[in-house]
Each structure stands twice: as structure tokens, then as C-alpha cells.
Image 1 (cartoon, helix red, strand yellow):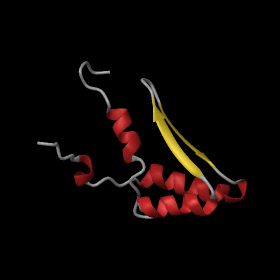
Image 2 (cartoon, helix red, strand yellow):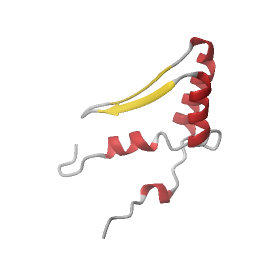
Image 3 (tube, one colour):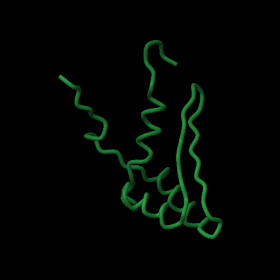
Image 4 (cartoon, helix red, strand yellow):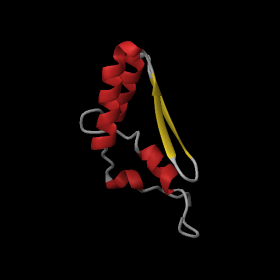
Amino acid sequence: MEKGVTGFAHFFEHMMFRGTDNYSREEYNEVLKMTGASANANTSLDRTLYHMTGNVEYLEKMFEIESDRFMNLKYPEHEFKVKLAQ
């Protein structure tokens, strides 16, 4: 870890839920709701863990949306910028 620079893993953990061209953030959440699944993530000093739980009947769909998220994540520049309070 670079001294004085922290938070990148946690930042990208949150960016992973921003959507893809195939599934917007809203569509991803709708698939989770439709299938009764839930997804989350957490970050520690040396790893980021993504997990999903759901009904085995929808396992193929769960793999589809997760693999899409990891292969096709989109994160436009404006998503990286934050407005600081004045």
C-alpha cells in the first residue's frame, strides 16, 4: 500500500455495482428482486469479496449477471467525480 493513499479498493467495490451495457444498475437490481437473490461486497486490507445468494433455480441467471458485471463494467468519468460541500 502506498503511504497516505487508501480507499481505492473500497471505492472500486462500490463502482462494481454501477451497471453494464447489458444490465443497468436498475436492471441488475430488478433481476436480483425477480430471482429472490441478494448481492453484496466487502473490502478489507488485503481483499475484496463479492457474494451473491439466491435460489438454485436461478443459478444460471445469477452467473450471467455476475460474469457480465465483472467483464463489462462501465464507469463513466462523471461517476468518479464528487462534488465537495462548500
